[in-house]
Image 1 (cartoon, rainbow, N blue to C red):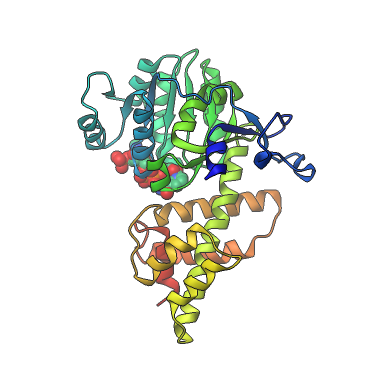
Image 2 (cartoon, rainbow, N blue to C red):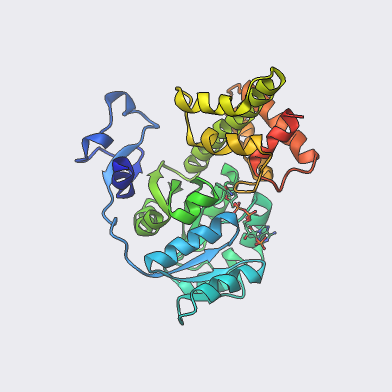
Length: 342
Ligand code: NAP
């Protein structure tokens, strides 16, 4: 709890000198290397209100935008299915709190030099919305600031960054770790890269939506960190499913497996949350399996690019692909267990 409160007030930046910090956050010498996270006090940890744009009110965006509204920001939103925007408006009917734009272009234009967040599902969706005639890029002008929070490929983020810069705008990639409930409760982790001034300006907003924010360097580094994290998570889910399948066939209680795991060195919130649900075959969606497989595929491509073998993740990916083929893509990614635990 203490750590949570402290981390809420901090941003973490790769490559900056450590400043005065509570001992709980001080960094050890072995951490002072290229990819380490050095902490600094965020100059803007006290939330300030403003008008921000938000594009994409899906599982994640819906929770994130509500955190911004609770912080006091007024928002101008665009979502492909207008019902989600209208639902938000009905929850915040006071004039000026929620405005619905007719296009992503209008969001950018109305926000002017303020911040616009986008949270779309896949690279194809993000590219479509970015390049459409009334899309994001069409609304970018000198001084515009775009923050893309989706999990895409590095090359997508870099292409968006370049295109925004050409028109005089600034870009920050900010993929998130955490799922639907952390998005609703402001407990996300932001893994950012790109324009550091936008990162600083965004801190009050990131702090409203998340418990910690990391600035990791050039555009692409945030996405790489996100892919590493999700590769580990998806592989863990696959491994948990196999363990439960093995226990079941060996006539052990699967509930006991979850209990034993929770009390040992492998205790973690993912197993605690998903273990009992897998046992009940409850795969109510928080993080859709189709997105988990997308992220695994991107992580495998990254591994190939940098020349690292990741056989466990590659094997896990086969399970997710099989689950997709069997029609489980819209369920939670825990539904990979349905392939394993036949
Ligand atoms: P989602 O609910 O499946 O979709 C997000 C948004 O994308 C929706 O607003 C959807 O519009 C829009 N969209 C999809 N295709 C579109 C298109 N062709 N044109 C315009 N809009 C389109 O995704 P999500 O779960 O919120 O995830 C968003 C991103 O965050 C993904 O990159 C995901 O990998 C990442 N992420 C997700 C989680 C999670 O737990 N869900 C956790 C961390 C990161 P409609 O409302 O009209 O369908």
